[in-house]
Image (cartoon, rainbow, N blue to C red; front, side):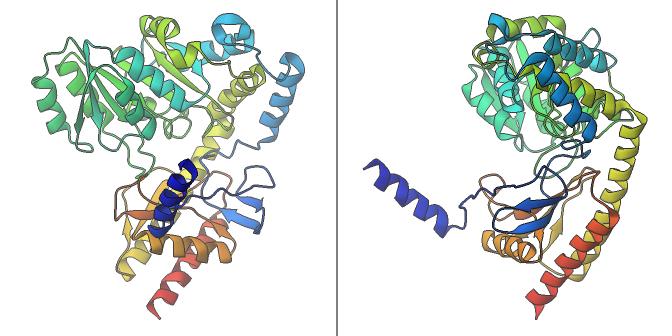
Length: 400
């Protein structure tokens, strides 16, 4: 019965053009990558925004870390898995965020998903109310579902609605929860406005900066540096497998919050610590991000964003049925509407040697299936031109 039940549901997924499929990469994460069954393809789908995932210095640092610390950590942080490599990385991350969160300390997690589950379930106790943007990442949504707190959702980016909800809230602990850069739309939250609302209502602001860390700010320190903010009310989550090029995540916050996470966060306490070799490599990644070379990569990346948006805007003006969402980040969503159309565009691009995934519900709302185009500092201007020409060819074929 179980297999029959599952197979029926899989057939329903197929009928709705919602089946997800994995691709097997045969070479490291780079814009020009080999894929099993497809050969070489130009990819616009990774979150390796600064092009560090296969950077020679990080590859060497990872190898050095493995020689120094071995392959694994052997246990959780609280048993025997917390090494000097982890401690050094946490200290560096705390120092990075201290200008924006006075006295900040940092705590490592194996993934951003685990970090967000920890934040929601540990801070969202029975005394709390969580106020969550409706377009938040799945990890924040799942965290709020697991929390014992009351949960109120506000329409995406609607600070007036949020302000009204907070004004009517009698909970002693109030936490506003939001993506800083929204992963499917690419827009940046009004963090100064959110912080102002938090201060007005004695609330805390939890920021998931997975897609801003390393990309935004003059030194790549993310959305807080981008806006020039500083407050003890900020609780910051950043991931280390996107712009930082490796793996893992961290929370930076007031020391009391970090200590509470150490004592109560189940996704921290009951899992093996990340391999110390990764922590060693990540310390080198942070040095790269804040260096002149890192600044040059960000400058090149933002030039590519402008180039792509200009080209996509021209396509949208000339052809009906396309929507380009506003975004100043490497995430550039081109909304096509129907699932079948998004899959057809994905297939047409693949036939021409370009890999861009079709994003469909439930990841995005019904009727907003899209191509989620993501850029890396390792792309060239010629790569972007090639993509734009391929998209133009698809539109011309559709119109014929």
